[in-house]
Image (cartoon, rainbow, N blue to C red; front, top):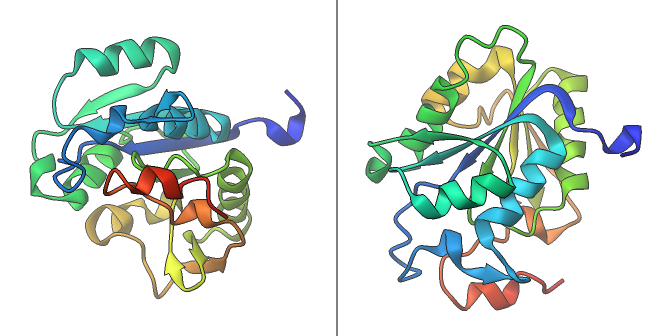
Length: 192
């Protein structure tokens, strides 16, 4: 792997995959896109970007165990996930406590498989260079992953992306805002 493609040292990826998928009508983590489950794409991008990857889920799932056999990540069970995305984010960030060498975190959503590894690495590098939280924006719409230096994790944990102090970066690829809420969204993922 070329040096510029190496995962970012001492940066963790937290993949939030504990949602209920009510609008989708089924567990969308396992919906197929490009012959892989949505969650597999997100985990692959996280691993291409970060040295350590955690995946937040609501409960133990044998299908997840099988996927993690191919794409290793540390599962983090979040029983409060039904209460909202903020609870999943907190569980994932809490699981990183005690990692003294951690320089930053990228927070991915498990239903956003079109984020390119190069884009995630670029966001992570920008976070490390500036020492500030960064978030991609595509045509005015905030996207993911959110990249946050370690010294900002308490604020990210409590309030989400610190909009006033963080940096929104205009992005040229729609993948940073393309999520899957409904089955029809799968068709839109590859559209420019």
